Length: 376
Image (cartoon, rainbow, N blue to C red; front, side, top):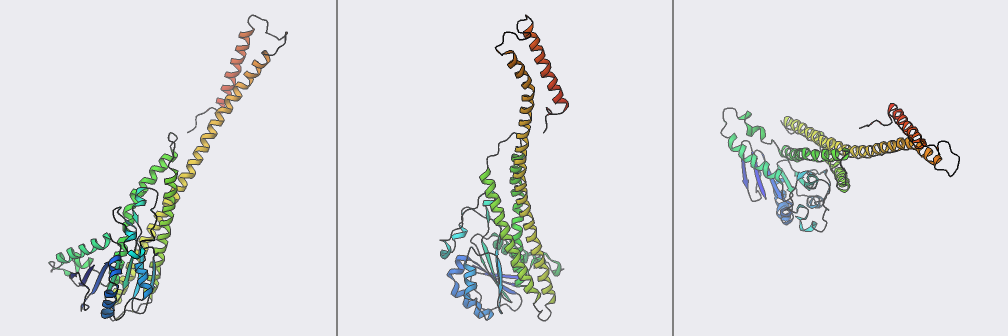
């Protein structure tokens, strides 16, 4: 568990739940899913003391569920956002079984390319209060750890910049509210997939090259099918993400600024639209990969059909060339005593010459008609 007291140009980190809210800024409580399950009573008591309201039971189960799709919900005291991340997982950590109550429902491993098998889609929960943000993460959430480390580092460097504190890197990176911090974390989760798209595109491009190469025999159909299924699952996950953020934006449009908080509310709306635009980029890329894989398969079968047609065309031409030769050979092979040229000494050579002339003439004719042309 990590607890951050965020205020202007200052961050204090602790390992215990806070007793009071800071005068300026807000509190960020970051818990792993297993920690949250074991500390439900303490967390609920802390939220009741600091914010005057605890989480309802249905939202508690949502935060503990590691298979829940992305969605948004709200109450009069807080907003709840569950967002399935698209991060590069690790094989040595079982993120699906980190909560003891959820371990029986194990999600099957995703097939396809290695990069698709490494994409972890575990949900991250956000409970957003006015001056407090509670986040429930998987066991190996690099976004949480990386953002916390960067906050601490930039705050330390920003305190030394007294000449233009409003333009310092720490001030630009410092979230202005709990909602701003939630959107920054969500945005980093979405951008995590954008970092994996190059490797995924490279793998699918390699398969396309194998599918279209006439010298290779592609036999990795099971992996290609699994890749298409995995991309379809990612498309559904991204659609749920987009729906959740759209619901959040609709709820945000109904908010009323408190005092001089109009600029803060406008900033939340801008960041929300930016997150939605990033999600739409991911959806566009995933669908483009799906279409590329399907088009590659169709082009492969079209190329195979074209190659078969080429072979059949050549065989047909050869059959047409040798058909009159077989006819001549069949005529001279009849069991008749009186056949022209049969008893002549030069009859054999006359027949061979005629057969050769016919064969060359037909070959020349088919070549002029481009029936024997090599087409690539």
